[in-house]
Length: 370
Ligand code: KG4
Ligand code: ZN
Image (cartoon, helix red, strand yellow):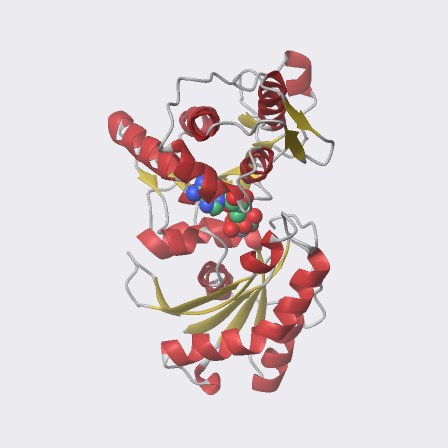
């Protein structure tokens, strides 16, 4: 089976070819994985501008798909199915990929498979590592999501925890903006954090009150004994703590997170703030995920999504997994951030269960995973 994957949910136009290998231990093979990033275009605005993103997808999609097929050495007629991100994401961006995929599927008379973006991130782990020990607790941590899934068997994703406010990647991007580092913030803070001391500036760990816990959404998994959601994350308080810290040092922060300062902060202070921030985010992600994995009886942990590219998160989680005898799986960097190979993999998962989508399915800004 050869599947063409297409991903246009945000600011990356991506296409990839993934095929079945015949080996049950490593069922899928990446034949090509092309990403045209719009980062340089959106950097000027400090974040993704939806209309510009949609228009750029229209420009790039044909060339990106052509290149994915060429690099895989696959002709259009050899493609068995087309998998495309249906949502969640920016609807104007999603529509470009969805329309392209439907047109190609009609022209080729092949099935089209609508894929949930987060199912793609989850399957990036199987794409990279093959079959991991199930049940697995899989953390999807990106610019738009911080969600924990229990995967008891391949292809079944049960939401057991998520952020109550900002996603971890969003916190990275906002704090980077406050520090005047640019966009996207994750890789920039990650780099600076390595140069700073993570104990020079202490930032608070997110805390939940009992009342807040009761207010958690009803679709989350709950601890059988306490009745509480298995895992909750919160990152907006951390952003506020960084704002306070900056204001104490004479930096004025406007509502749109613009900053003005009579004297710019020394590089060393910025590095220390980055290191302190990264420490608290990573500790919260790792602690909550391990705790939930234990509560749920998971036999492995997976971490996927753009923030799983973070050097400290990868290192701390894998090391703790070694110490505690709970293996941790993270995809390679090219499969961590948004890509179409993961969408093709999630499409293959559905196709192998006999599922495809009707040609009138629509793009969806918000979408349940099943
Ligand atoms: O999964 P992704 O590519 O797109 C979404 O689905 O959102 O994730 C993008 C997010 C951005 O917020 C970016 O700042 C963050 O992933 N990111 C990182 C790193 N690389 C990307 N965050 C922390 N450390 C990194 N090294
Ligand atoms: Zn993503």
